[in-house]
Length: 120
Image (cartoon, rainbow, N blue to C red; front, side, top):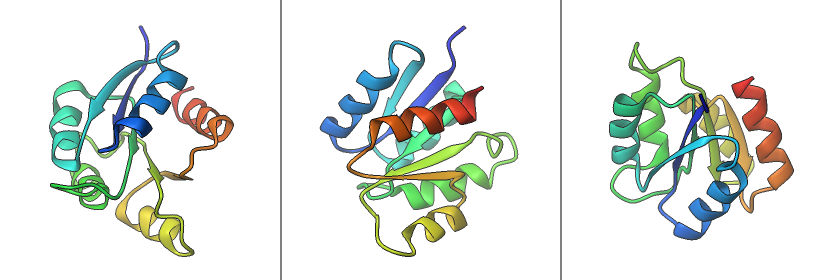
């Protein structure tokens, strides 16, 4: 059975890019904001979450904190995939609970390498 990856991003272009890279090997779930990401994480129990940090409704920072605060969900690895690529943003993402960090624009090889690292 294919591993499930939840792709959380409010920008269709970014979602489509990640989906195209991963859909042959993984089952892809999609959320458009942090609130939807939390709902889908509870419902579908993905094996990995790729979390944009800057989104409307609820941002990825808060969604990550809430997922990691839940005993049933906190084991799910979260990789921040974000244009928040300033010095210190990776540290803040990790403080919020992200297990890894990929800056945008996405380096496809780096994304594939990190996804495989968490899902083997």
